[in-house]
Length: 331
Ligand code: CP
Ligand code: NVA
Image (cartoon, helix red, strand yellow):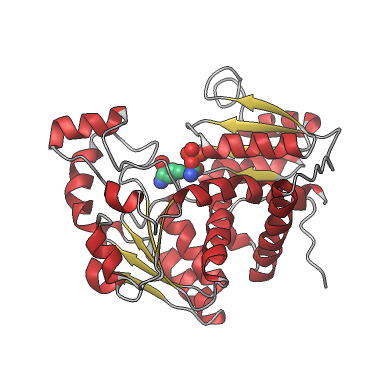
């Protein structure tokens, strides 16, 4: 039977089969080719989407907006202020109102429960643009970027260095398990993903001939790695006070030239962005003044190196979000 995602929400990768993820990747490739060759595909003229952002965003917001406009759709942006959502109106009521006006809704915010609730009551597809627990649209872009570099996904060795229990650590572990990629988290024990999610992923990985490992020693974790991935040490929504302890915990897990040299020769470096690889940001500068560090999760040298594919990855957010919307709205 063919894959049909019409009307389905995109809330977390655990809800999708490897075949459905494959379908989204193939559709992304097709839509990217169209965009690159200047083919205009306004398949969804007459449709409109709402994009809700309770947290900041550059890539995700712009990807949804550009992808929607490319497809001929109208877009309404709702920021952390300016709507009734959450303050005077429940998520359930907001979902039922927006679902009467829009053909699809993107949500970025805090608890996964909120996006699940939105999807339950909206009556139209809801797309998770990041919650505290998961960042599934990022996963399709990351898988596409890996495949563009290696020509395959199955059997590759993927290592995530850093806060392995944040939305990226969780999502990447699921994405790798689903697609037959060997996943290793290099992190201190206290930042390992929850045992429940690890157990779920071990089962999924078994079905797809891959492995899940949690390792504290970054050198042994990154040996034979094809992909080295990292993310910020403190995520949006976390308390400011955690910076100091997180810097202490995760400095040994910074991605350096030594780590990249320890990996396979053709290994790539990935990061969902934004990244603290210099002190050209207000937070970066502040951490330099407080703790004397000029780089955090990755050195500027690795970030700017030939092995770094971070901007291809960022571009792929747009092509893959377009595919997710098109598939669920009915391409
Ligand atoms: N990677 C990512 O989600 O970036 P933004 O926070 O800029 O959307
Ligand atoms: N873990 C990061 C990802 C940002 C795209 C955060 O939630 O802030």
